[in-house]
Length: 98
Length: 153
Image 1 (cartoon, helix red, strand yellow):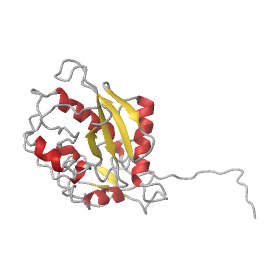
Image 2 (cartoon, chains in turn red, blue; image 1 turned 120 degrees about the horizontal axis):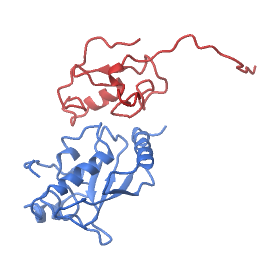
Image 3 (cartoon, chains in turn green, red; image 1 turned 90 degrees about the vertical axis):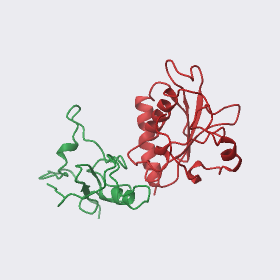
C-alpha cells in the first residue's frame, strides 16, 4: 500500500535542556564539542536522536553526547578528564531533559 | 557507514571552505579523510619571517578521540623549521599532539598552536637529541614516547 502524506500537525517537540549551551551572541546552539553534531542530533555511532543517544553533563557544566564522552573517557590519553577544561570528569547528578 | 573521523573531518572541511583559514595558514590538500596538508607561516616579525612550511596531518578512523599524527613535510625540497621542538625529519614535540590532546581540538586549532609555537621562538636551533632521534625515529610520530620537558617555547 502506498501512503501519501498530505498534511501533518506537530503537537509537540522535544529538545535537551541545554540552555547554557546557546550562544548569547548568535543565538545558535553550540554542537557537541567532540563530534560537532548538534545535541539534538545524535552521536556518529547512532542513527536516531533521543533517549537512546542521551547527553551527559559534567559537574564542570560541560555537556557532550554520552557516547562521545564515554569513548573519550575510555582512552588512556583522556586521563579521565573533561575534554574542555581537563578537570577530572565527574558526571553531574540526574540528566535533565524537557 | 562513514567512520567517526570522516564525519567530523567533513564538518571541519566545510567550515574551512566557508570561513577560510586563519591568517598565515592555507589548505594545500584535503582529498580524503586520511591525510591533509596545510602551509603555515608566521605573520609579522619573527625568526621565521618569509619562511613557509608544510604541515602534514594523518588521521586514523578514531579521530578526534585519537589525536592526529602531525609533522612538517621534509620531502620535495620542503624543510622543517629550525626550532628547539622540531626535529629535522619534521617530527614535532608538542604536548597537545600527545598526552595533552583533547577531542575538542581541531585541525585548525592545531595549526594555530604550532604557528604560535614558531612565533614565540627565541633561538633557532634543533632539539639537543636531534641526530639520535632522527636516526631511529618511526615513520609515524605518534609512535614516539615524547617527554615534554620545556613549556617555555
